[in-house]
View 1 (tube, rainbow, N blue to C red):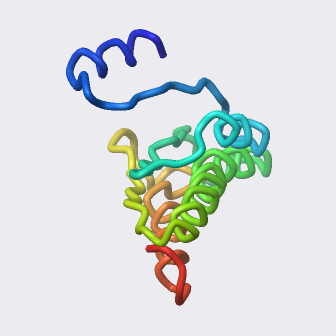
View 2 (cartoon, rainbow, N blue to C red; view 1 turned 45 degrees about the vertical axis):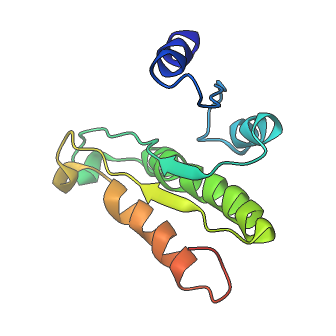
Length: 130
């Protein structure tokens, strides 16, 4: 984290940057982020994993793990920070990113669809931040 922050501060000396080490695939990890970061202007959901495994070889635990990492991490962060923005009456710039490595056809998840579902859910709520 320190190395990345040093590069950011060198490239953008006026920027306010901080780092937090946390496992955002868990509710406890997300809470650790929330304790350190009170607001964000741009949220980039790029946490995701991929395991090339044939569909019939993927266990329930494989599915749960990928769902927690690829879906719930984004849900927790988006929900927290979008509500923060709603209270401040400003929009949250929200970019769910899809990884470009691997083939989704043989994985027990579709990372792009998972993240798109979070975005569509936000957009479908009247009065909610987009």
